[in-house]
Length: 63
Image (cartoon, rainbow, N blue to C red; front, side, top):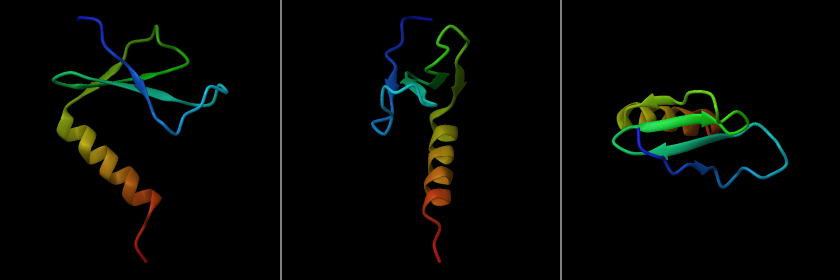
């Protein structure tokens, strides 16, 4: 696998909290920013989109 460009959420800071990083190619790669030597999780863009939609819905449930 070629070198990936990893991005951390804009909500993350550098105080050592729990963070994930994401890299995009034809798939979405996800890793723990505190342990980057471990293998990353790879999911399809569709699966990632469903996950993000679910997180947004859980964060802002409708009344």
